[in-house]
Image (cartoon, rainbow, N blue to C red; front, side, top):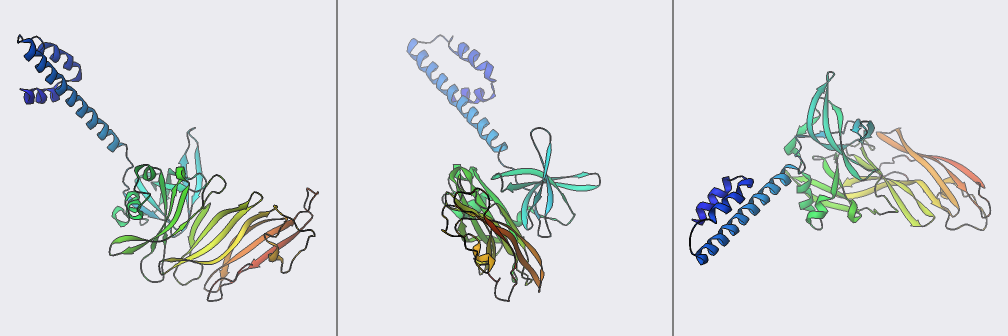
Length: 358
C-alpha cells in the first residue's frame, strides 16, 4: 500500500497533495490504525517532497555550472583586441597578452569576420571576463587538447581540493614553446578571497599534463601579485621567455615593480634578467646626496624615486631588452626634486644570459 502511494505521489502535482491527504483521512477504520496510516502517509509524502526538491536543486546547480569550452585559442602569434560588454551597455576593449591560451565557448559570424567568445583573466581586476575576439580559421585547437580548470586544480592538490577554494580560483593559461618537445603549459593560479597566487608549470607527458615547478606570488591589500604577463621569443633559439611585472613592497615608503624575464629549463624557472620599472625608497635618506657612477647604481638608493620602462629591440638572433628611465633624488625639508639623472641601458644577450642592469 505504501509503495503504491509513493508511486502515485511522484505523479501528483504539488497542489493535489493536500486533497489526497484529506481523502485518505476519511477512511473509516479504527482510531489506532487510522492514526498509524495517516502518520505513514504524511511521512511518505514528506520524503517524496524532499526528494523532488533535492532533485530540482541538483538539476539547477548542474545547469548553472561553468560551461565546458568548445576549443582553445592560442595567441602565440601576437596579442588581440578583446571586447568586453559592461553593465551600462558600453564596451571596453583591452589587449590580450601574447602567448595566452584562452577557452572558447562559442563562435559567430559578423560582417564577414569570425568572432569567438572567450574567457580571459584580467590581471588588473583579479577576475575573469567574458568577451569577444576576432579569430582566423586555423586559430582554434580542439577542446580535448588541454585539461579543464577543475582537472588542473585536482592535480595541484590541497588546498585547491576544497570546494570553496576551487570555486573562487581563476586560472590564466599561457603556452611557452620549448626548443625541444611540445610547449609547456604555464598557469597563473589566483584565489583572491584567500590572497593566494602561484605560477605553475604543467609539462605534457603521454597525452597528459603533469604539474612541475611553482612560484608563490605575494598577493594582498598592499601587493597585487603579477600585474602583466606575456610570452616572447627573445633569445632566438626556439624557446620562449616569460616576461612578468611583479610589484614588491619592503617598507611603508619602499615599494615598486620589477620586470623579470624567465625561461623554463628542465621543468624549472630560470631568471635571466630583471630590472625595476618603479622603485621608491623614501623610508631613509643619506646625509648627503651622492650621484653614483655608472648611473644605474642609483636605482633604489635611499631618498630616490625611480621610474622607467623596458622595451625590446632586435639584436643578434633575438631581441634585447632596453631599460630607459629616470632617478630623482630627494632631501629632507624640500618637497621638490633636488636632482635627477636619466638612464638608458641596453642589456645585450652574450650567449649565456642577459647582462645585468645593476
